[in-house]
Length: 407
Image (spheres, one colour):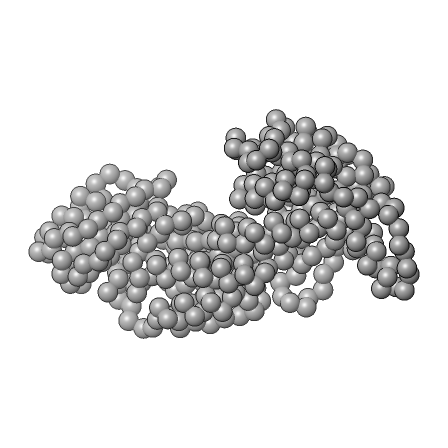
């Protein structure tokens, strides 16, 4: 189990935002005392809650800032039980020796299925029909109702979700075009567009599946909506801050946009049952969902299993495969003792470390080193118990960021 030198108490994990119980089960079985909370925490409350905590699990609403990380140096790893990690200061985490893991693939299918459902619902104006019938009005009409077969779907962001949506949409008879900042291989008969403007002028339905990088903030506003074809449909299941909702409202009210589905918002309530406000509330043929793109029982179970599994692997063996902020290392097999050294990426650290191991009468049975930017990370197996004096010398190396042992 992951320990820093000198620690002896049972390690603790804190899980926020109603993470699937599978995560608690896995971490508990790995020897962690687990506390689970349903809601998100602000900076002050998070700092207080992290006292004595080694592993933190969050979703999208809890922000782990540099200030939080500086005040809680005992925190060793963070699991983002979602796709995005922009809610975590990754650079500050890396500088403090805190490994961060996420779930880049586990909820892809759930998001794609919601997008397909919303495209069909908007094209058939099912929301308006549903509201009328609940109001006691029988409005049996084909007016404004269309098939999606033969329609052109424009996907902005052709990553894991966008590309899988491309395949399913094409199987339903849609023509698919896409735009991505990077050169991506088109799947099936999908066609890449040379610019966002080209996609907007050709697509009858536009759906956003971009990541949370800062450069995407406000990328879709009045100019982009005005370029879209008249009476087209718009979906955003990516990040709330990428869309100007006032501009979307204006284009919906003018009739230029025939319908919209929005699952993410610039400001979202922190806890279940909190009041939700948006300028899009009450508009016809608009589907608003509370950030549930990946919220199926199947996806949440898979996310809980995957991210907690990464935290357990790190805790037990120092494995950092698929970490988003520290070098990726996996050393298979085990010897009498293992330690991991996260250090500044400068020449000579490995040589000095191995020399210290030899001076203590130990042999290296296995060793893997990887670097990433300003950091290096080495996991080492030795053929005997780790002397406290060796661990003290490794900790005192000027390049050491964090030393972990795995008894």
